[in-house]
Image 1 (cartoon, rainbow, N blue to C red):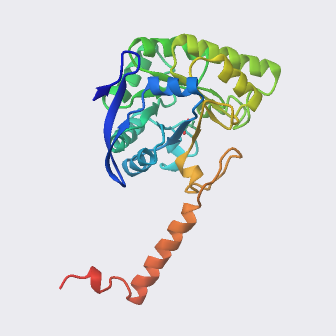
Image 2 (image 1 turned 90 degrees about the vertical axis):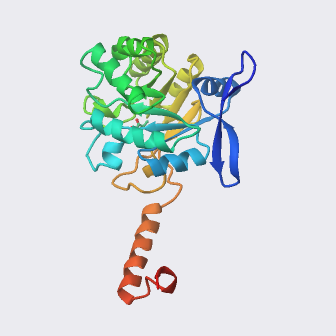
Image 3 (image 1 turned 45 degrees about the vertical axis):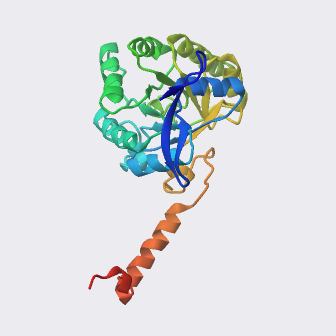
Length: 289
Ligand code: KIV
């Protein structure tokens, strides 16, 4: 359903909340742009499956990233590098089945956009057409700007990603803060400008000093979404498993752990084991006569 005047068209969706069915505005690129203009912070979290997408959408988060971080958090890989197009399609499809209001961005995996522009458009198209994503995300700056422009020209919204770009972390010397020297900061500023010129709908800034993130946020017309980039960005993104304590192989300094769900889950599983062993579960109410 569409409502609003000429300059204020909103897509309205019916959402099932705890209070029953309610009408809510579907998040679009226009919503995100307006949020930047009004100084309203944008919230984004990763999700890789249907139940997580349901929870993130129900919580009123604005954007979901089907991040290639799924390589580590749900596939048990050591990095995002081995993640494939098939992995991303599979997980994005599951997420889309759980989403009613969120704007969903799917990561383009390493080497799915780096070989030829045609291949990049084809792969971006698959994430939108087959899996239903609203936009795709690519890592890199000036060097991938022509590819970004080609994807945008094909009609697919692109979110940029600058600073620490995990797919090329080896080239960057590891998972480190980027843009600390004046030359490195200048390069990231130029990258941000090049991405905006190429037509991105926004830029993720990962692990950069706050002052640099603030300068980029002030310079760009499109929203910046920070992760380890300070509080001045237009929005923030975190990995779902990190912020809920479901992934504890390592914890970057920029992560705030809102819950320790791993400990709660293990406690529940041990309770189940104990009750089965003692014959307490299943009880009368779980038993058919
Ligand atoms: O894959 C991912 O989760 C990401 C975020 C860290 C921004 O790219």
